[in-house]
Image 1 (tube, rainbow, N blue to C red):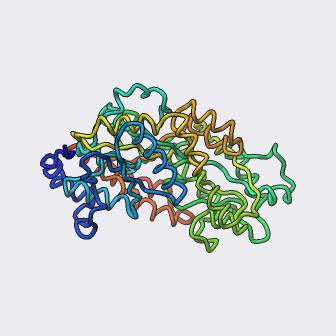
Image 2: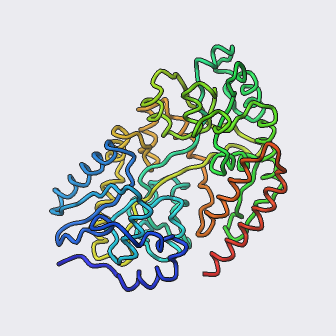
Length: 417
């Protein structure tokens, strides 16, 4: 029997949600690689791959599962996952299983495109709470996270030692971060660098005790004193000259600035490991947890989940495959192949033991939160990022007042749907 999907249901939903998902812009181009395989005996898995290592590892894993279960599985490494996934849904033929990113999840879930299979999965409690929260909508845990990344403080150990700093000076709070950044800022090197964006600066707001949403997710809380304190701390680092955004260091991102030796410390995730190994293999560095603020420790967590289309006739097979892919053994194999951190607490603990140089990224997930990503938030956050580029001369209160108004309008629209 040829697998079929609830095309009529998706078609109706997509007419209502096309603007939000940007599917109208994706309606042209593409061919057989945009959606389900049409294979009478198989599944199609669509991934957004970081490179050949990831594609090969995922293909090997799903092929092994397929051989054990008598099912052929085709892996499609999308060149543009958002576009090709959108084309699959708009054509009524989405892949049977796919990467669903944290920043797209709320949009897809709110439009009822996803099967909420994870809620009743036998391993639901094995995942980090922060990751379960990232893929929860309307109190339902929809899809199992495949791995995760958090932000840490990356330190150039050669520049650190040359400045006379020791392990005792590794920043644990804002005061010690300021002190280290000041000491390291010399001879054209910035003590600290990170992107002029919410996905980095938002950690300071959280460390001050702030957040952009109330605990129940019903109210925007962008203009609180805590969030103002977070932005004010970043502005202080900028005006002191110890923090430089990557663009001010002739760099496309802070990893490049770090690799070139233009910044002694940066705030990035574990993806920097591969970038440095490939482009700047001679740079020596260590990773520490982000310093705590007056509100305590905080970092952001980023993840993808394994999405399944709602009402899919192949859902049972896809769920079985997800169970295999999210096992500790398989996730650790993925870690070996392309560096991701397992999404289960037990798997991540084993990863931290095996890769102690990345233990700080794992520890961060104990208190990490996901960036705000409800349907419609992305446009507002883009405008917020533009304002943050001028933070050195800007007014934190005014920037957050604008964010409060615009984000609340977006939330009201999202909740009214």
